[in-house]
Image (cartoon, rainbow, N blue to C red):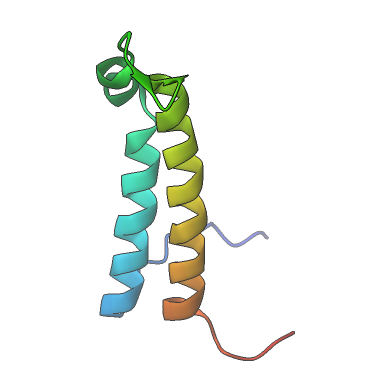
Length: 77
């Protein structure tokens, strides 16, 4: 008999910070935010939407690095 999947919530302040960072990155890529950014404006020769895409990629990388430093176990497998 299979065990049902359980939702595990963070138990530390750092864990909740990681969840918040990841949710912020996810929300920044959803349609209402993208529609707000999609304007005919050039930033450094690129459309604002392209710059926003680069910002999301950088923010997701930064969120993973911060999450690894805050919530990482510290031992290399």
